Length: 325
Image (tube, rainbow, N blue to C red):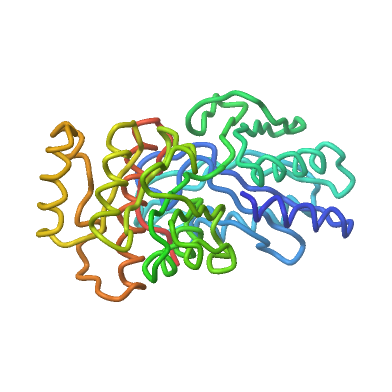
Protein backbone atom coordinates (compact mmCIF):
# COMPACT_ATOMS: atom_id res chain seq x y z
CA UNK A 1 0.00 0.00 0.00
CA UNK A 2 2.89 2.38 0.69
CA UNK A 3 4.09 2.05 -2.91
CA UNK A 4 0.58 2.65 -4.22
CA UNK A 5 0.13 5.86 -2.26
CA UNK A 6 3.63 7.12 -3.04
CA UNK A 7 3.00 6.60 -6.76
CA UNK A 8 -0.47 8.11 -6.49
CA UNK A 9 0.95 11.32 -5.01
CA UNK A 10 3.51 11.46 -7.84
CA UNK A 11 0.76 10.98 -10.47
CA UNK A 12 -1.44 13.68 -8.96
CA UNK A 13 1.53 16.05 -8.77
CA UNK A 14 2.07 15.50 -12.51
CA UNK A 15 -1.59 16.24 -13.20
CA UNK A 16 -2.42 12.67 -14.25
CA UNK A 17 -5.58 10.71 -13.47
CA UNK A 18 -5.44 7.16 -12.12
CA UNK A 19 -7.58 4.13 -11.33
CA UNK A 20 -7.25 2.25 -8.04
CA UNK A 21 -8.31 -1.40 -8.21
CA UNK A 22 -9.07 -3.09 -4.88
CA UNK A 23 -10.27 -6.66 -4.34
CA UNK A 24 -13.27 -6.33 -2.01
CA UNK A 25 -14.20 -9.99 -1.76
CA UNK A 26 -12.99 -13.39 -2.96
CA UNK A 27 -14.64 -16.80 -3.13
CA UNK A 28 -13.01 -20.15 -3.77
CA UNK A 29 -9.39 -20.40 -4.85
CA UNK A 30 -7.98 -17.05 -5.97
CA UNK A 31 -4.43 -15.66 -6.27
CA UNK A 32 -5.18 -12.72 -3.94
CA UNK A 33 -7.89 -12.00 -1.43
CA UNK A 34 -9.76 -8.95 -0.15
CA UNK A 35 -7.53 -5.92 0.28
CA UNK A 36 -5.15 -6.63 -2.63
CA UNK A 37 -4.67 -3.49 -4.71
CA UNK A 38 -3.09 -2.13 -7.84
CA UNK A 39 -2.77 1.38 -9.22
CA UNK A 40 -3.10 1.99 -12.96
CA UNK A 41 -2.40 5.09 -15.01
CA UNK A 42 -2.36 6.05 -18.65
CA UNK A 43 0.73 3.86 -19.18
CA UNK A 44 -0.84 0.82 -17.51
CA UNK A 45 0.23 -0.80 -14.25
CA UNK A 46 1.96 1.62 -11.88
CA UNK A 47 2.17 -0.29 -8.59
CA UNK A 48 0.69 -3.22 -6.70
CA UNK A 49 -0.97 -6.44 -7.88
CA UNK A 50 -4.29 -8.26 -7.59
CA UNK A 51 -2.71 -11.62 -8.43
CA UNK A 52 -1.19 -11.52 -11.90
CA UNK A 53 -2.27 -13.78 -14.76
CA UNK A 54 -5.48 -13.42 -16.78
CA UNK A 55 -7.41 -11.86 -13.90
CA UNK A 56 -4.99 -8.99 -13.51
CA UNK A 57 -4.75 -8.57 -17.29
CA UNK A 58 -8.52 -8.13 -17.46
CA UNK A 59 -8.42 -5.76 -14.48
CA UNK A 60 -5.86 -3.58 -16.26
CA UNK A 61 -7.89 -3.59 -19.48
CA UNK A 62 -10.99 -2.46 -17.60
CA UNK A 63 -8.98 0.12 -15.65
CA UNK A 64 -7.75 1.62 -18.94
CA UNK A 65 -11.35 1.88 -20.18
CA UNK A 66 -12.57 3.49 -16.96
CA UNK A 67 -9.65 5.91 -17.07
CA UNK A 68 -10.84 7.07 -20.50
CA UNK A 69 -14.48 7.19 -19.36
CA UNK A 70 -13.57 8.87 -16.06
CA UNK A 71 -15.81 6.66 -13.95
CA UNK A 72 -15.78 3.98 -11.24
CA UNK A 73 -17.50 0.60 -11.00
CA UNK A 74 -17.64 -2.80 -9.33
CA UNK A 75 -16.61 -5.78 -11.44
CA UNK A 76 -16.43 -9.55 -10.88
CA UNK A 77 -13.48 -11.58 -12.14
CA UNK A 78 -14.35 -15.27 -12.61
CA UNK A 79 -11.22 -17.39 -12.36
CA UNK A 80 -12.73 -20.62 -13.69
CA UNK A 81 -11.53 -23.05 -16.36
CA UNK A 82 -13.28 -22.45 -19.65
CA UNK A 83 -14.68 -19.10 -18.52
CA UNK A 84 -13.91 -15.67 -19.86
CA UNK A 85 -10.50 -15.67 -18.17
CA UNK A 86 -9.82 -19.40 -18.71
CA UNK A 87 -8.20 -19.78 -15.30
CA UNK A 88 -7.97 -23.03 -13.36
CA UNK A 89 -7.86 -21.33 -9.94
CA UNK A 90 -11.59 -21.98 -9.58
CA UNK A 91 -12.65 -18.88 -7.66
CA UNK A 92 -14.04 -15.40 -8.10
CA UNK A 93 -12.80 -11.95 -7.16
CA UNK A 94 -15.02 -8.90 -6.87
CA UNK A 95 -13.06 -5.73 -7.47
CA UNK A 96 -13.76 -2.06 -6.85
CA UNK A 97 -12.42 0.14 -9.66
CA UNK A 98 -12.14 3.76 -8.51
CA UNK A 99 -11.39 6.60 -10.89
CA UNK A 100 -9.08 9.11 -9.19
CA UNK A 101 -9.07 12.52 -10.91
CA UNK A 102 -5.82 14.45 -10.83
CA UNK A 103 -7.51 17.42 -9.12
CA UNK A 104 -9.08 15.39 -6.28
CA UNK A 105 -8.28 17.11 -2.99
CA UNK A 106 -9.82 14.19 -1.09
CA UNK A 107 -7.49 11.57 -2.59
CA UNK A 108 -4.43 13.81 -2.26
CA UNK A 109 -5.20 14.43 1.42
CA UNK A 110 -5.92 10.77 2.10
CA UNK A 111 -2.69 9.63 0.42
CA UNK A 112 -0.67 12.08 2.49
CA UNK A 113 -2.28 11.05 5.78
CA UNK A 114 -1.97 7.35 5.01
CA UNK A 115 1.73 7.71 4.20
CA UNK A 116 2.27 9.63 7.46
CA UNK A 117 0.68 6.81 9.45
CA UNK A 118 2.59 4.13 7.60
CA UNK A 119 5.86 5.96 8.20
CA UNK A 120 5.05 6.29 11.91
CA UNK A 121 3.70 2.70 12.11
CA UNK A 122 0.41 4.07 13.42
CA UNK A 123 -2.75 2.06 12.92
CA UNK A 124 -5.48 3.31 10.63
CA UNK A 125 -8.28 1.98 8.44
CA UNK A 126 -8.95 2.91 4.83
CA UNK A 127 -12.63 3.20 3.89
CA UNK A 128 -13.43 2.97 0.15
CA UNK A 129 -16.70 3.34 -1.77
CA UNK A 130 -17.35 3.48 -5.52
CA UNK A 131 -19.09 6.85 -5.66
CA UNK A 132 -17.80 8.54 -2.49
CA UNK A 133 -14.62 10.18 -1.33
CA UNK A 134 -12.25 7.92 0.64
CA UNK A 135 -11.72 8.33 4.36
CA UNK A 136 -9.17 7.29 6.97
CA UNK A 137 -10.62 5.86 10.17
CA UNK A 138 -9.06 5.52 13.63
CA UNK A 139 -10.79 2.21 14.36
CA UNK A 140 -11.82 -0.75 12.27
CA UNK A 141 -11.87 -4.52 11.81
CA UNK A 142 -8.89 -6.87 12.10
CA UNK A 143 -9.00 -7.56 8.36
CA UNK A 144 -10.71 -6.27 5.22
CA UNK A 145 -14.50 -5.96 5.70
CA UNK A 146 -16.90 -5.51 2.75
CA UNK A 147 -20.63 -4.87 3.27
CA UNK A 148 -21.56 -4.71 -0.40
CA UNK A 149 -21.12 -0.96 -0.53
CA UNK A 150 -18.03 0.00 1.45
CA UNK A 151 -14.69 -1.73 2.04
CA UNK A 152 -12.79 -1.03 5.25
CA UNK A 153 -9.23 -2.37 5.45
CA UNK A 154 -6.38 -1.78 7.91
CA UNK A 155 -3.23 0.02 6.89
CA UNK A 156 -0.33 -2.47 6.65
CA UNK A 157 1.86 -1.00 9.39
CA UNK A 158 3.83 -4.27 9.57
CA UNK A 159 4.81 -6.63 12.35
CA UNK A 160 7.96 -5.89 14.33
CA UNK A 161 10.71 -8.52 14.53
CA UNK A 162 13.32 -7.96 17.25
CA UNK A 163 16.57 -9.74 16.36
CA UNK A 164 18.81 -10.36 19.35
CA UNK A 165 22.33 -10.53 17.95
CA UNK A 166 23.81 -8.36 15.22
CA UNK A 167 26.12 -10.90 13.62
CA UNK A 168 26.40 -12.14 10.03
CA UNK A 169 23.06 -13.99 10.12
CA UNK A 170 21.24 -10.86 11.29
CA UNK A 171 23.01 -8.91 8.55
CA UNK A 172 21.46 -11.24 5.95
CA UNK A 173 18.10 -11.46 7.71
CA UNK A 174 17.21 -7.78 8.06
CA UNK A 175 16.78 -6.92 4.34
CA UNK A 176 14.83 -10.13 3.66
CA UNK A 177 12.41 -9.39 6.50
CA UNK A 178 11.99 -5.82 5.28
CA UNK A 179 11.21 -7.05 1.75
CA UNK A 180 8.17 -9.03 2.97
CA UNK A 181 6.64 -6.39 5.19
CA UNK A 182 8.23 -7.00 8.59
CA UNK A 183 9.84 -4.21 10.62
CA UNK A 184 13.25 -5.52 11.78
CA UNK A 185 14.90 -4.23 14.95
CA UNK A 186 18.44 -5.28 15.92
CA UNK A 187 19.49 -5.59 19.58
CA UNK A 188 23.14 -6.31 20.52
CA UNK A 189 25.42 -5.48 23.44
CA UNK A 190 28.43 -4.78 21.22
CA UNK A 191 28.72 -1.22 19.82
CA UNK A 192 30.52 -2.39 16.68
CA UNK A 193 27.62 -4.73 15.86
CA UNK A 194 24.77 -2.54 17.12
CA UNK A 195 25.62 0.10 14.56
CA UNK A 196 22.84 1.77 12.53
CA UNK A 197 25.20 2.12 9.58
CA UNK A 198 25.60 -1.67 9.58
CA UNK A 199 21.82 -2.16 9.33
CA UNK A 200 20.45 0.61 7.09
CA UNK A 201 17.16 -1.26 6.54
CA UNK A 202 16.45 -1.86 10.23
CA UNK A 203 13.75 0.22 11.85
CA UNK A 204 15.87 0.60 15.00
CA UNK A 205 19.26 -0.60 16.22
CA UNK A 206 19.67 -0.91 19.99
CA UNK A 207 22.99 -1.27 21.82
CA UNK A 208 22.21 -2.51 25.32
CA UNK A 209 23.01 -5.16 27.91
CA UNK A 210 21.32 -8.49 27.24
CA UNK A 211 20.63 -8.94 30.95
CA UNK A 212 18.19 -6.00 31.03
CA UNK A 213 16.24 -5.92 27.78
CA UNK A 214 13.34 -3.92 29.18
CA UNK A 215 15.44 -0.83 29.91
CA UNK A 216 16.73 -0.81 26.36
CA UNK A 217 13.61 -1.73 24.41
CA UNK A 218 9.91 -1.98 25.23
CA UNK A 219 8.48 -5.26 23.91
CA UNK A 220 4.79 -5.78 23.16
CA UNK A 221 2.62 -8.91 22.81
CA UNK A 222 2.55 -8.27 19.06
CA UNK A 223 6.33 -8.51 18.65
CA UNK A 224 8.23 -11.42 17.09
CA UNK A 225 11.59 -12.25 18.69
CA UNK A 226 14.51 -13.97 16.94
CA UNK A 227 17.42 -14.99 19.15
CA UNK A 228 20.79 -15.40 17.42
CA UNK A 229 23.33 -13.91 19.81
CA UNK A 230 27.06 -14.65 19.90
CA UNK A 231 26.79 -17.50 22.42
CA UNK A 232 24.54 -19.77 24.45
CA UNK A 233 25.01 -17.73 27.65
CA UNK A 234 23.58 -14.65 25.97
CA UNK A 235 20.80 -16.74 24.44
CA UNK A 236 19.93 -18.01 27.90
CA UNK A 237 19.80 -14.49 29.37
CA UNK A 238 17.57 -13.30 26.54
CA UNK A 239 15.24 -16.30 26.65
CA UNK A 240 14.76 -16.06 30.41
CA UNK A 241 13.34 -12.57 29.90
CA UNK A 242 11.36 -13.25 26.72
CA UNK A 243 9.59 -16.32 28.09
CA UNK A 244 8.28 -14.43 31.10
CA UNK A 245 6.12 -12.20 28.91
CA UNK A 246 3.58 -12.65 26.09
CA UNK A 247 5.01 -12.36 22.57
CA UNK A 248 3.69 -13.28 19.13
CA UNK A 249 6.66 -15.56 18.44
CA UNK A 250 10.02 -16.59 19.90
CA UNK A 251 12.55 -18.41 17.73
CA UNK A 252 16.09 -19.39 18.69
CA UNK A 253 18.95 -20.39 16.40
CA UNK A 254 21.10 -23.34 17.45
CA UNK A 255 21.69 -27.07 17.34
CA UNK A 256 19.49 -29.61 19.12
CA UNK A 257 22.31 -30.20 21.62
CA UNK A 258 22.52 -26.50 22.45
CA UNK A 259 18.72 -26.32 22.64
CA UNK A 260 18.57 -29.18 25.15
CA UNK A 261 21.24 -27.52 27.30
CA UNK A 262 19.58 -24.10 27.28
CA UNK A 263 16.13 -25.57 27.91
CA UNK A 264 17.39 -27.38 30.99
CA UNK A 265 18.90 -24.15 32.30
CA UNK A 266 15.58 -22.40 31.66
CA UNK A 267 13.77 -25.04 33.72
CA UNK A 268 16.26 -24.56 36.52
CA UNK A 269 15.55 -20.83 36.35
CA UNK A 270 11.86 -21.47 36.95
CA UNK A 271 10.59 -20.98 33.39
CA UNK A 272 7.39 -23.06 32.97
CA UNK A 273 7.57 -25.99 30.58
CA UNK A 274 4.64 -24.60 28.61
CA UNK A 275 6.62 -21.44 27.85
CA UNK A 276 9.71 -23.42 26.84
CA UNK A 277 7.66 -25.53 24.43
CA UNK A 278 6.43 -22.40 22.66
CA UNK A 279 9.95 -21.61 21.47
CA UNK A 280 10.67 -22.38 17.81
CA UNK A 281 14.07 -24.04 17.89
CA UNK A 282 16.00 -24.86 15.84
CA UNK A 283 14.57 -21.77 14.18
CA UNK A 284 13.37 -21.67 10.59
CA UNK A 285 11.77 -23.90 8.01
CA UNK A 286 13.58 -27.18 7.31
CA UNK A 287 15.41 -26.42 4.06
CA UNK A 288 18.89 -27.55 5.20
CA UNK A 289 20.05 -23.93 5.33
CA UNK A 290 23.79 -23.43 5.90
CA UNK A 291 24.91 -19.98 4.76
CA UNK A 292 23.69 -16.76 6.42
CA UNK A 293 21.66 -15.99 3.31
CA UNK A 294 20.01 -19.42 3.36
CA UNK A 295 19.33 -19.10 7.08
CA UNK A 296 17.71 -15.73 6.41
CA UNK A 297 15.35 -17.34 3.89
CA UNK A 298 14.59 -20.20 6.29
CA UNK A 299 13.83 -17.90 9.23
CA UNK A 300 11.77 -15.53 7.11
CA UNK A 301 9.75 -18.45 5.74
CA UNK A 302 8.81 -19.54 9.25
CA UNK A 303 7.92 -15.99 10.26
CA UNK A 304 5.71 -15.57 7.20
CA UNK A 305 3.89 -18.77 8.14
CA UNK A 306 3.44 -17.74 11.78
CA UNK A 307 2.24 -14.30 10.71
CA UNK A 308 -0.31 -15.89 8.37
CA UNK A 309 -1.61 -18.09 11.21
CA UNK A 310 -2.08 -15.04 13.44
CA UNK A 311 -3.79 -13.11 10.67
CA UNK A 312 -6.00 -16.08 9.93
CA UNK A 313 -7.02 -16.20 13.58
CA UNK A 314 -7.88 -12.50 13.32
CA UNK A 315 -9.78 -13.05 10.09
CA UNK A 316 -7.33 -11.17 7.91
CA UNK A 317 -5.51 -13.82 5.86
CA UNK A 318 -5.71 -14.55 2.15
CA UNK A 319 -6.37 -18.04 0.79
CA UNK A 320 -6.17 -19.54 -2.65
CA UNK A 321 -3.97 -20.58 -5.52
CA UNK A 322 -0.51 -19.02 -6.00
CA UNK A 323 -0.13 -15.73 -7.83
CA UNK A 324 0.49 -16.01 -11.57
CA UNK A 325 4.05 -14.72 -11.90
